[in-house]
Amino acid sequence: MKKTSLIITVLLALAVAALYVLHFTGIGTGKPAAVETEPGLSEVPTGNIVYIRMDSLLNKYDLFLDLQTDLNAKARIVEDDLTKKGRAFENDVTSFQEKVQKGLITRSQAETQQNQLASRQQELEQFAQQKQMELAEENQVMLNRVLDALKTFLAEYRVLNNYDLILTTDGNSNTIIEGTTALDITKDVVEGLNREYAKSRK
Image (cartoon, rainbow, N blue to C red; front, top):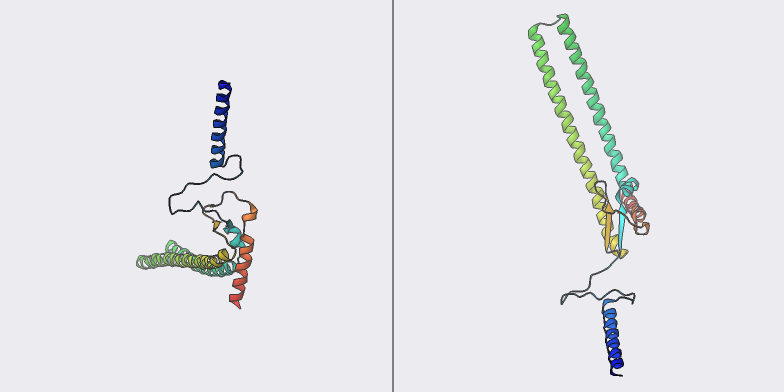
């Protein structure tokens, strides 16, 4: 009899221990285990996280498309100007070489013209570099304007939609490796941005 009661006591003790473990770890209850935190600190927060596909946004954002069109037009003008100057220089070089070969100018005249052509070539290269720098600067300003408009819009958009975090993918690195399309807010953001841009144009 004593042996039987001892076995029952041991089984009850094990059962109580098992219930204790299950209760405080959350196993079998479908609930997460309690998170121990330092005094004064709350549990790890959870919230709504969404993302934007930046490449898709830029391809449909009217402000970016308009600014890009303007910049491309300026780039074509610069390219045409450089092409004209380059052809004129090449024609002058060819003409000079023909005169030298035919003996139509003196050695002194040849040296003078050669120096002039070298100076023109240097000026043409400097002009091309200057225009390239100007276009690069305008491109950066364009991107800054787009980014500023996006940040301003998203600051209000995030609060209105109760989002805790908005992630993005960009051309250099993909912050989002994989995500469900339900979290993709690109289309909604583009529509909102285009509405704001349309108002500003009016």
